[in-house]
Length: 137
Image (cartoon, rainbow, N blue to C red):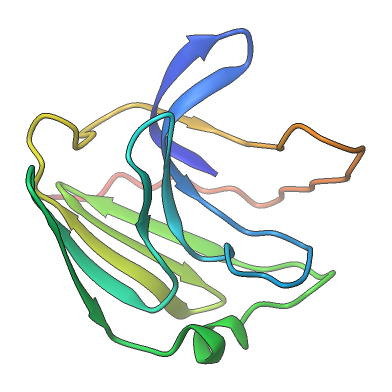
């Protein structure tokens, strides 16, 4: 799921990306990646504070423990909370990343939502019950 992203044309978007994958080994589900930007901003189980010069990381959970909440080959509930510069992602009620993006020149404050599928071999991706809720500050 792309959020606060920019439409680059020709079905390409750039911005924050909440990942989930079906393959094994799965080191990407739950991470925060910035497509066409700074790359991996937070890995599963990390709280990260980003500034223009550094990323301060702190583990709040073990990645493998967080991964246990992810249902393979089944429906998962992915929650993305983007309030100001604070971004939190959860899968099935378990927090996967907690990011505060203080890099004023690169942090996205707005943008589009996009449903993503990677290039490569044929695959099936399904989405359902998508809800968008505007949060107060």
